[in-house]
Image (cartoon, rainbow, N blue to C red):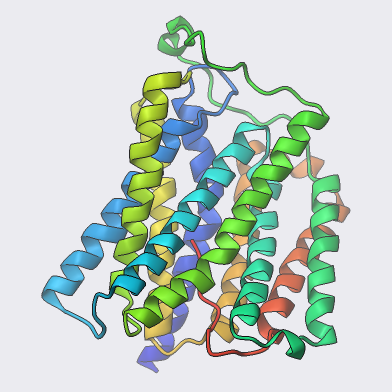
Length: 348
C-alpha cells in the first residue's frame, strides 16, 4: 500500500511539474526581455541550465555520497548519458525558440508531449530490433497523434496574451544594435515555430532510448546518468550561451522576477525527471507511468496557459478535440509499442 501511494504521488509530481514547465518558462522569457512582448532567448536558457545543474548534479551527488546505489561509472555509460543530456538541452532550446517565434504554451507543449513519445517509441523499437512487430493499432495511434497535432495548430486560440508591462528600466534600456527585432507574423515565422517544435520533439523523443543505453552501461544506475544529464545541460545551456551573449548580445537582462521564473521553469523540468525516477523505484512500469504523464502534463499545461492569458472565450471545440486526439494517440503509441529489452524511458 505504501509503495502504491509513493508511486502515484511520484506520477502526480511529474504531471504537475511538466505541466507547469512551458507557462513558467515563457513567463521568465517575457520577464527578462527589455522589449515588451518579445521573449528573451539566451538568458532564460542559462537559468534552465543552472536549475538542472543544481537539481541534476548537486542533489544526485549528495545522494550517492550519503546513500549510495547499485551500478558503477563506465566510459560507455558516461558517453551515452552525456549524449542523452545534450538531447534534453537541445529540446529545451527548441521550446524556447518556439516561444520566441510567437508560439504559445497553449499548443506548443501539447504538440511536444504528443510527438516526443512517438519518436521515443519508434527509436526504442528500432534499437530493440522489433520493427517487424509493429501492429496496426500502434500505427493507428501514430496517425491519431499527427491528426490531432494538425487540428491543434489550426484551431489554437490566437488572441493576444497579456505580457507584463515594460518597466521604466526596460523602456530606458536600448537594445543592442545586433539584436534582431521581434519576429512578426507570416509564413516564415510560422515555419520557424514548426521547426523549433520539431527540434524539441526529435530531441526529447530520442532522449529516452539514448539515456537508457547509458543506464544499462552503468549497470542500471539511476543517479549517475542523471548527473551526466545535469552536466550536459550546464555545458549547452550555460557555458555556450554565455559566449553567444558576449558576441551577439540580446535585448534582455537578469531581472529578479524574470530570472526567478526561468529558474523555476528549469526546476520544474528537473524535478519532473526525479519524479519519474521515484515512480520507477516505487514499482511503476513505463507501460502505465508514461501514458499517465504524457496524458496529464499537456492538460495541466493547456489549462494553466489559457487561464494565464485569459483566452477561455477564444478556445474552440476543435482545439479541445485536437488536444484529446494528441493525448489519446500518444498513449496508444506508448501502450501498444512492441516491448523490447530497452524500455521507454522518460524525458523532462
